[in-house]
Image (cartoon, each protein chain N blue to C red):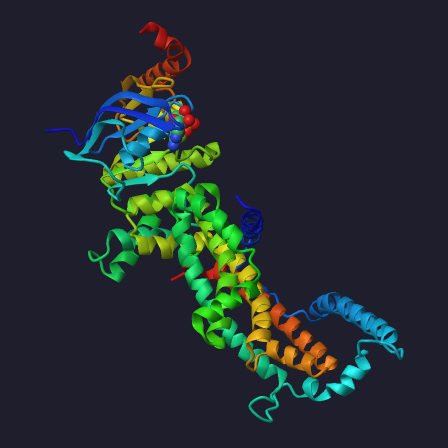
Length: 297
Length: 265
Ligand SMILES: Nc1ncnc2c1ncn2[C@@H]1O[C@H](COP(=O)(O)OP(=O)(O)OP(=O)(O)O)[C@@H](O)[C@H]1O
Ligand SMILES: [Mg+2]
């Protein structure tokens, strides 16, 4: 087993234990909304990061306030880029739009590229996981391909598609598909022999086996792969857009650099970071929901 | 009349890396319809292997297995298996686990409502109808094993194959489930083959006990008839003469004779 796969396996092994004591969902709210407890837990989770953030901003402000500072301090960013911060959804022209719009445009590309990678990756992973030889033969190749940085695919992609938008989508696809394939294959390999025997006694056909046994049994692994994949595709989109242009958030940074708007770049970085964080949490949440309700139909 | 199930001169060896392990040698056994047969033998002798051959989960190396004159060469719902570790699918509820089998086996033969009734009927047989909505992780080991039995029964199998179905259970739960199985056998008249390590269990439940020698190349050492009339009552049997005689015969085979079986031949 490879390092990623092993890590995935460990994470996945840890998860069923957690979901093992899944209490019926309806029960938690039934115990009554405890305002005090909720406030306390909110305070525990929110206050420390807020304090750390304030301290960091203060340090930044002090260290960049000197005359020779090369980066703008937070106060200057606030005044320079007030429009970008306060109005994420403005629209002054086709090239002059708010950062939220730019993020949404980038997200659309990620949605297409990563969506394709998820579907194709799970399908390929499921096929490979079924066969020891396919696994042995293909795993080293995948291990090499998955280390290729996203941007290294771009020239090939541009040559193949002759157009920037499909190229950017292809770069996302090819960057994020490897962890999905590898983790799905490991998950399928690790389906207990007992479940396969149940399927064989019932004479489930290939499709039924895939839907009723393989997907739910390998779901923790698959979602580990998807989580890694969505992170990679967000990395890839920003880099790809810098080179291919358009109106996405990646190109915005490149554009801002060319016109020396450092403050705008920093605001854009915050947008990118927060979006990446939300994407990761969304996929993780989806994984938990699927683990709880999978194949309930 | 020809035998219902005929295990005909079976040989089984596993091959791994060019090294063959001879597990079963020349097993021949015929089983009648409605008969309850136990297989007993020391750990690792090949009992599970034999059961998997009958189930069709592993192919035979030589010989043949015939069910109603037709050769067994793949698994199927007419030879339902109750697995040693229950093998319920953890992402399905108790009801859905049984329903998966029912909707597959009776697809096109029973309507939706009939399938629901049939699932509930089988859960009722093992007194698990109340827990239909629970996940396997939320019920006890004995309950899981009962659901496993319900799932197998729901396939309306010609033969029910039980691989140490009560192995991991405490004595009290075990006794309850043995009674449940005896009751089901009496009511439905299924043909059953059960693997066990427990001498009392074998004598209590079986019409015949097949005793296997130690591996490698295990074979059938002895087949013992259990001439005790049914219905059987475990308390009354405790002092029954033929019960004690059968029990002693099995114990003798397992703890005295099996050691020099090879030398004696
Ligand atoms: N797939 C396999 N490949 C190689 N050898 C196997 C395989 N399955 C079983 N064996 C070997 O066959 C022998 C019999 O195994 P089996 O599981 O049938 O024993 P058993 O009688 O059921 O034991 P237990 O009572 O402990 O369950 C063992 O020595 C085991 O190592
Ligand atoms: Mg066994």
